Length: 136
Image: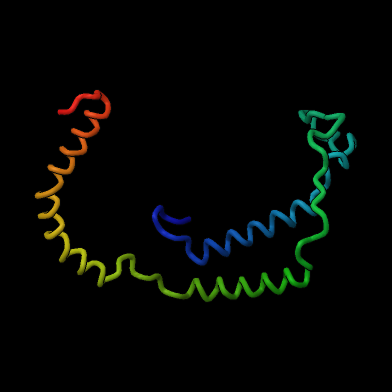
């Protein structure tokens, strides 16, 4: 749905919100395991019948959102999703950042060539001294 290192798109966020709403609605409308009777399952030969439910029924309490408010929200989110789907994707790389990166690359390379070996050597010496207790 989204590549690593990128923020989620508007479509990803909307899909996630819709999924949460659908899951809550499904939980509220699904019959509890204790409501099922042996007669309901008699057509299935390979069904394991339980005398007691595996977990106590979950009390979700009153709905968090009125059905009318949920419908209005759903319409608004669908409208936003439609508009977001028609907007062209932004370029992956900002052109200004690309120019600056190209300008800084040789400067950074020169600095690293000059300073990195000494920095690594110094840190390795300190770590060896810390581990062995003897200065190098």
